[in-house]
Every structure is written in structure tokens, then in C-alpha cells.
Image 1 (spheres, rainbow, N blue to C red):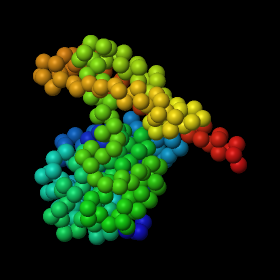
Image 2: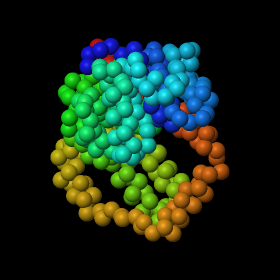
Image 3: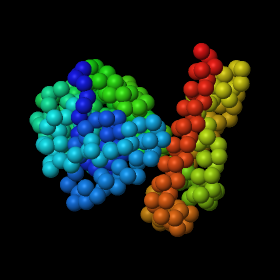
Image 4: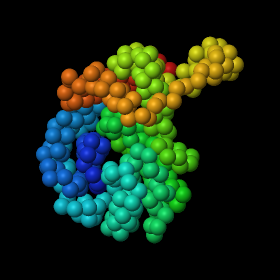
Length: 316
């Protein structure tokens, strides 16, 4: 698993796959893309044009990205010379079983086989594979060319060498890999996101707040805080000089008494939430909303990195 990485295969060119493609190419890799979509050429070209400025703002090689991206006729051609395979297919166990059987057979023996799976652990689709040691989850947050986190989740048969190779690879392409110690559906990021989303839906269903006002609550408080410190460090700091111990013993006690809501799964109740979100946001085109999101996220990342750099200079 110490083979140098020159070529990446991206299997599946949806939102995540296209973002990976741009990121890998910006780091100088040759990228072969496979997807049965009939508009693959146009989709790749559009993504490279759209994401190029984001990558340039990060100091990456955004010029001539298309020269490093090749469209493969099929999966076999895409993975033939790959050092890394990043799979971005549908969230279906049977689909991934069949696909990874093909990948193990067709990709070079040294190639690391990574899945962008959002919720399905690797063990669920690798139990019948002859060579599951090099298969593991590399789950990004959308879009991966901007958001640094990659959750590395080994399966039961993934080797320690493959885990380290994944850490090294994602670090080399500027991501922030976190190795999770055991498999759990949804991993960590999506479970945290789901917990917040469930309470958000409950509050809207109960008429406490509208979707856009709830988003304002998050972006003007928790969102700013969590962009700089995580929940545990935030609580540690919130406890003052007594730290997390003080927070847990005092304010934490009242927080534990809060009964979080259980959102209704009744179709009519779900539909009311959908309509409320559409009322808040549907008047603005998706592309405009996504562009604004990415521009703001890039600004936050840049500001945090500048602060980290300035702090490092001050300490040295």
C-alpha cells in the first residue's frame, strides 16, 4: 500500500464524484472518470469550469484541469491503471457488492479501493470479496473539493496498511482525514447532522419557528462556533476556568433535562415541512443557492486558515 499515487479512478460522476474529480486533478493526478450518464462529457466540463475558481482560491493547480481528466468508456477502462479508486455509486448494498467485486477483479493489486458511502459500512458489502483488505470507506462532506473532512472507516477485513495509505492519500490532497475506530451506520458526521435535522424538523412541525428563521439561528450562532471549535471544546470553553467538568456539573444538568422532540413521520406532516422549506427557498434557483453556499464556505475556510497561520507565526 506504499505505491505512489499518480492515477485516480472516479466511479460515479454525480455531485460528489465530479467534486472529487476536480480536486484530484487540481493536485496533479491523472483522473479517469466512469459513469453511464449520457451527458458525462458536459457534466465533467461544467464541473471543472465551476470548481476551478474554488480550487485556485485554495492555491491549487486550477489551470488546464481538463487536460488531466479522461473519460473512460467503462469501469474496467477507468480502473485499469489506477492507484486509487474513489467510488460514488448509489447507496444500495447489493449494488456496491457487485461493483466492488468488479473493482477487486479489474483494478491493479496495489490500488486502494475507497467508497464515498454516506451510511453503509464497508463490511456490509465486502463479506464475500476475496480481497477486502484494501477496501474501506472514505466518506466526504459535500462538496469534497471544498470541505476538508474525510471519514475513514475500515471494514472488519481492512488492513492497517490500507487505513494508513488512505490517511496519507487524503492528507496529500489537502483533506482532513479522521479514522473512526469502529463501524456504525451513518458514521459520525451524518449521525450528528441527522440529530440536528430531526430536532429542526420537530421545531418547524410544532410551529416554534419557520425553516428560514431556524437556519438564521444556526448560521448566527452554532454555525459560527462550530466552524472554529467542535462541540466538546465549545463546552469546555463554555465552562470557564472550570472547563468541561464545570459545564457538565452545572449548565449540563439543565441541558440534560431537555426532552428533545420526535418529529412526526405522518406524510401530511412531512409535506407541510417540505412546503415550508420551498416557501423559504424555492424562489431562488438551486445553482444560485449552491454558489452562495460554496462562496461562504470558502470564505470561512480561508479565514480560519489565515488565523491558524497567524497564530503559528506568533508562536514561532
